[in-house]
Length: 331
View 1 (cartoon, rainbow, N blue to C red):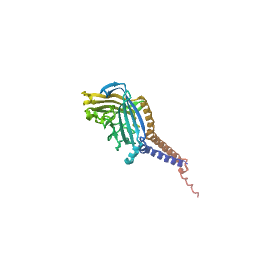
View 2: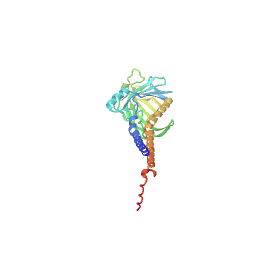
View 3: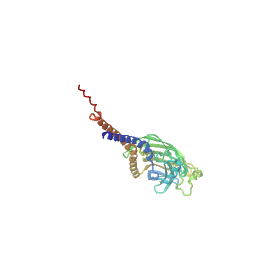
View 4: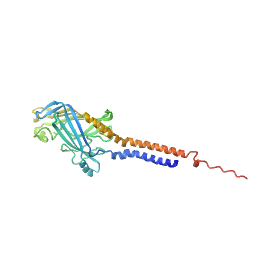
C-alpha cells in the first residue's frame, strides 16, 4: 500500500510541478487580454485654467475646464479585423470632449485606436485615425502592457500624431498601491486645429490656410501605472496651447488658447483604483499565486512520496530481510 501511495503522490508531484510553468508561460499570455466590448469613462479637470474666448479672441482666466474622455470597445469592427489579422484585436472608439466653465464645447476630438488584445501593440488596419485623419501608431496609448517593465516605452501623442519615448522615472506609492511612474514632455509643436471648435460658420480644417494663424501645443504628461495590469491609476498633464501669428489675432504675435494643470477628478481616481485592484488579483492568480502554489505543492508531494517510499523500504520490510543462513548438516 505504501508503494502504491508513493507512486500516486509522485505522479501528482510531477503534474503540479509541470503545471506551474505552463500557467505562467503558456496559459497567461493567451488568457490575459483586454475585452473587446469594454467601456470606460474618465473625467479630468484643470482648476483654474486659461481659456481663449473665440468671440473676442482674448485669453481669460476661468475657474475650471473639464475634459470628458470615453473609450468604447467596437466589437463588430474588432471581429472584422481579427479575421484578416489572425489574432485577438481590440478596437477602441474614443472621444476627448473639452468644455468650458459654462458647459459649452471647446473641442471634441474622436479617435479610433486598434491594438492587440494581449500585448497592447498597435495593429494597423483601415479606420485607425485621430479626428478623421488616418494615422499609423507606433507604441502604446492609454494603457501599458500586462506586467509592465521598468523601462521607457514609445507613447503615441494624439495632438502631434507622432510617437516619442515616455520615460520610466522610478517606483512610487499611490493610494496604497506600488506603482511605476512615467513622464513625457512634448516640446512646442505646430498641430492641426480640431475639426469641431466653438467657431460657427468657420471650417477649422481651412483656418490656418485662410488666416495664416497657426496652432501650437506642448505638454508634460505624467502617469502612475500599476505594473501588474499595465493600467494607469492616475494621470496628469501640464498642458498649454497657443495660436500664433496671422490675421486671426489682429496683429498680435500669439495668444493662449488653453493652459492648465489637468488632473483626474477624485471620484474617478477612486473608482479606477478599485477596478485596477480587482483586475490585479486576476492577473496575479495566473502569474504568481497559482504557479508558485502549484510549484510548492508539487515539491511537498514529492517529499511525501519519497518519505513513504523510504518507510516502505525500512528494516522491517520482509523484502529487505537478509536470506536465512543454512543449517549445518549433521553427520
